Image (cartoon, rainbow, N blue to C red):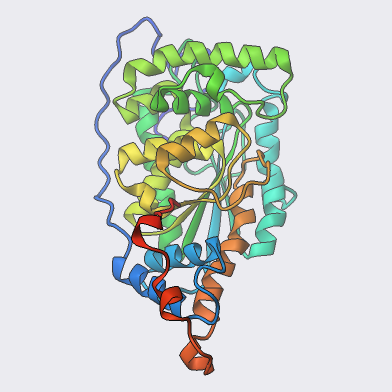
Length: 392
């Protein structure tokens, strides 16, 4: 669905003609998403009640119990069932800011990794095989040619260097969000019952950091991380790039589409559309790391309430990741010191979520097993003033 010719080099292409930082901000055409419906409260209550009747002390499975309840509410049924067709969709794109030396790897690696995904040699391929998840790659802005199977939604080659120019034109920003929405629809219509958004793009943690900083009111040093493993000199270059890009982002912070145009890239814009539309379609999403988290923050602006359908797979070690989780009021399933992206952390968390689902669905109740149930004190749980609502 490419509507704008691909640019051979993102930072200088006249065909793309991104706005100069000297121009005043231009309001974007509004992108409408349907209203997000809340998860099924009746199923949630039924799941909570069932947890109290299973052959175990109340709360003894800890977070697993909460995860089972979360899934029941999103599936709209109790007991819930293990996900039959989880899908990791990796959005790939290059970023002009890479020319500033903010990554330990050259931009060519993005396209090479796309090939690696397709041939089954990446970490996510191995992790997906352990969970039964499918892997799909969507080239939104790789600065090079990729296989036709992944490039149908491609918007351009690379993105503008966001420290001095817009990442995308207005038309490209709209096309990228629309592409992400279309991909979500394609996956749900094909039977996906759990979606994972993954990312692949050299230097993509830099625009992610800008989005997180501007939406949380944070300073560059609070969000900049080591990304692919950069040294101190590269970290200082990255911090300076984020500082300059943040000045431009602040001017459009109240307009999510303008923010994607100014400071994101086609891959992140598509992820935002994907995450928003998944919630509209009442399909649960397992979030991955800091880049997906940045896209999720914008997606929540595009489709308020979308976060009700998201579960944080893990806490990335990137500093901005914790800011994302706090902003969206989400608690990660895992905290393993991961920072790869690609959907890897979410896929690693999936067996834990499945364990929560299966214990809720497959354990017998005290009555079914003929076992004495809990005492009245245990069944009622702690006093109301000692109970807490835990975010997901």
